[in-house]
Amino acid sequence: MKNIMRHGIAGIASVAIAMSGLAIAGTAMADTTSTTGGSPVTTDQTITINATDEQQLTGHTLKYIQIGSYTQYGSTYGLVTNSDYATDIVSALKTMGYTVPSDYEDNPLAWAENQSPAILGQETVGNSSSNERQLAQALASLAATHGTSLTTSSPAANTSGSGSKTTGELTAAGYSETATLPAGVYEIVDTSSSNPSVPIIISTKGGPTVTPNLTNTIDMKNQNTPSAPTKTVTNGAATDNTFDAGQTIDYQVQGIMPDDSNTTTYTYQFIDTPGVGLTLNLDSIKIDGMTVSQLNSEAGAGSVTVDPSTGTTLVGNGSDKLTVTLSKAALDYIQTKASTKVAIGGNLDMTYTGYINNQITDETAVNSAQVNNNGATSQSSPEVPVHTNGNPNGGTTPNTNPNNPPSNPVSPNEPSPTSTNVGMWWQKIWPNKTAAKGAKFQVSKTVNGTTEYLQAGTNGADTWQWTTNASDAEEFSSVNADGLFEIGGLANGTYTVTETTQATGAQAIKPSFTVTLKYGTAETISTSATGDPWGLVSSSDDTVENVKSINQLPMTGGAGIILGALVALLLLGSAATLFLVYRKKAAR
Image (cartoon, rainbow, N blue to C red; front, side, top):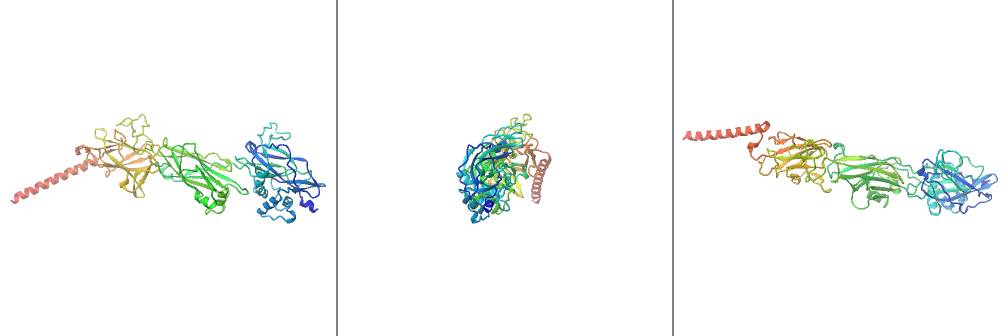
């Protein structure tokens, strides 16, 4: 009776596996199990694996080992552990927290199936984190190393949905595969490189009387295909996701921490595809707030890899990808040891920076992201666009007029006052509307009460940055012979433009004015009595006049008042002088 209990009925449900139909080549492995009394069961039995879609049963390569067989004791059946793997199974159970009694060390499966809670026969769907799944994972390397290979084939449709099951048949409930094996218990591992399943343990039925919860049929599923990640720009709200060329853009890609428990190998990837006009900074990547080097230091060298592995930037072209791969070591560290831990099912974030470069087209650059959960790739996130105003040109190359008509009232081939997305522009002219040459301007903005000046950036050609040192400000000259000033690649905002050098031959009267940019609309030029008391700036034509003599100054409005005041002062001064002269003569 003790032997009967020791060789208890075996029925082992499985853990999730992805496989493409089972085509077992031929015959059984050599039976290396040992028995004490009873008669070994040598008849062939079947296992059936069901899937919900063809991709779970197509093109996967499997290996299997027989870890147990059945022995008949009269009208009952017992489970006998394969002696080749008994020691490994004892060790695996020990890592799970179980101590196998010494008198069961030659047959640990028989002991395991009689434990409460059960270790074997717990499930009929291979997707849980049960004890059986843990045991299957612990034995995976044995099957991968010592197992017999089998290659699966594509399932075929069963149009009737009835009749006996055959290899590759699509049943009414979905896809299924059956395989014929000697009666026993098997470990099966998927050695496929793409979306491999976790290992499973599955049993055939050893005879007419079995424990009710044992089964030789399992519903499998692949590694869950993850949902598309959430991708956002985290520092663009104030400017409607518009940026200067070269300005830092903060990105976040949010996935879900996978369940990598009970596995010895696992990978999770963030995949980003930057579009034309966008450059990513590879040295800015962080996972859950930790840099790549920090994670590799804490979780182990190579636990996080970045592709491309060389260089500091990735210049987007719409096809080249940034791939950041987290190993099981990195995932486990974040789950259990990181300063900000992420539980299974929690949000797992990757952050990094980028910037708009001078290859941007139509003032817009996009990128999208995916995640890959141990071989299962998600759909792409919606594209996240960033914009700038005008094509970045370093203030040296004119853009073409996108509006035809209307045209510029001064120069028909240049931007007009209603042109959109051409950046910041104005024309320097004389009162007769001809081009005034030789003038220079600075551009500034106010940030939290501090004046910052525009200067050439360091993130490549035609990019911008800001300085609080006025002496370092960029001095802009006209970009063509028509006196056109044009600066592309700026974010939404209001900027102050100040003339610092008047046109050649002009009076030293240098106005300032503001330009407001908003993506998708024409610029707005505004003036003030202090910045342009002479009315030299036209907000309707987007022009700035210079004069060669004071009598060319406008005589209306504030300018007229100022000029009148100057004339009055001159007259008063002259009168005072005459009065003094008269008194001196009278005193004589």
